[in-house]
Amino acid sequence: MTDETRWLSTEESAAWVRLVALTELLPGALDAQLLRDAQITHFEYVALMALAAAPDRTMRMTALAARTNATLPRLSHVARRLEDRGLIRRFPCPEDRRATNATITDAGMRLIDDAAPGHVETVRRNVLDALTPEQLQQLYDIAGAVLTRLDPDERLTATACQFSEGPAIARAG
Image (cartoon, rainbow, N blue to C red):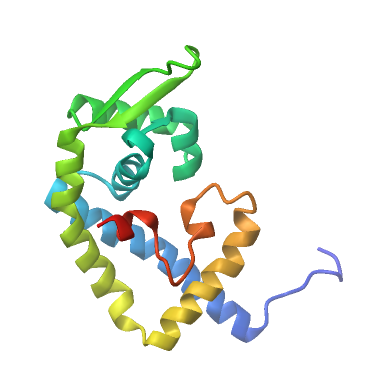
């Protein structure tokens, strides 16, 4: 330790502890609903949604890994499970045979269509309904400020998402 350490103030420490609690509790709440209703985890849901929003519902596995903030080995493991369930299909990339593409199947599209209402209700109940419109704007601004540091290359679509637009998949209906 050096004298240059910028220790957290009481207020900073309290805010940090609450943020850590959110990052610990929210994934469990999202997983519980999706596992109950669709037998998929939130990570699997995010991967399926990314494929659904992609041109031709297809992405290279490396791009999907970047979009979901996953390592390629983790994504490959998850993709194998999704493929075994008939929710995605993997195949050699036609432009680069060394790469692998993934596409969401019609069954995968049906699954996310069926899972979406419960997922949205869980998001509303656990996060959005607890906020005033002003707090929602503040949450957007705060998350954006932190995301620009954590994701400066905007690999995650959330980093570049504009408040007035929302994610592209939400606009697509």
